[in-house]
Length: 412
Length: 69
Image (spheres, each protein chain N blue to C red):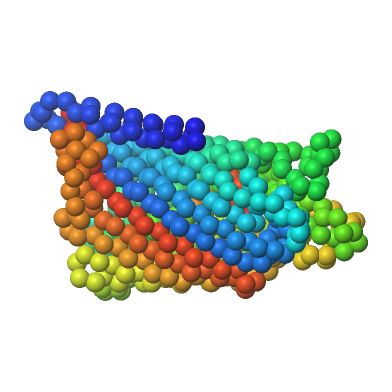
């Protein structure tokens, strides 16, 4: 809750500080681009019967309500600040079973059945219009009951003079600090099952985007991700074939991921566009994945866009995955987490965007005294997701996008 | 797979020689033509990252933080 309060205070302070610093009018002033504020809220529910908390069997039921705010503030004509913060409130029958072995007749619902994760990320970007380049950095923090995570990031971007080609390089480092919570039957104050409670993740990303002609844009992205430290989850159980007592998930302390994505957007005509994404993925745990995502934005009149979408994903299993009772006590690495199993997933749904030319509504003094803020557009999106192992999920998302008049600055 | 990637790179490199003038970017400047996921998709991308052993190359998070449950 501390982090939530701090997030609200920081956001209020930043918006007020920027918007109230307007000085007297002057003919040598220019009006900066509007501040944009998006409130996004999602409701997510899932269910399945392969929870890793109970060793690859048992309920995966979970609901999550996630309000978030995304603010973009032009500080002047070349510098901007982006703030992204929110809270995930979740209720999970699965994590409740950290304190209840599979099919325990004495099931007791405890504190682990619900939690909140709060987070904030702040990014700063500076453009160089002469060199057609920009650089930026970001910091972030998130906190929930058993994990605290911090991140720092850096990005560089360079465009061609005609701005038809852009190359980006990004690096981001995460440090996750875990509170090691073991399944209830394995808790013994003197026993430590894991060598570390820290996870390091270094994500390096490079991408190029291209305007192929007046109606087609494409990009290619290659990431290289290195993760080290605690890569298993301490309260995931694994049931072995030669003992009735569960042990905990154990995974190697190093993971190297290489995803490569290609994206193409095509303006087919004034009513219809095609958005296409393909990703190939491989890692040193033995997973190979292929993902395709297709969206077809359809313009209905001048104010509404409908976007039906479909996503297909397939992956091979990690070398360390096995179903319940498939390992023996001699195995070094083992998991029954079906997220790491061989599976196919599909997702389909519909997005609706409502954006009248002059906005949906105006409010005087809502964000800035005596100034009119505008509810510019609204998004509503629904997706149904299902996996080949019977797992299903529904997600609804609502987005309200506001613009707030920015200050004006002196030009020299 | 390596060959496929090289072919895609070659096609993109050759095609990018076409110069689109600023005044010809009316269609490319449309919000549906932005080469990234939309803000409204951020939660979907988040749960997919957790529910699949695969992540990255889409501008979203590809490591760090808890993915429990």
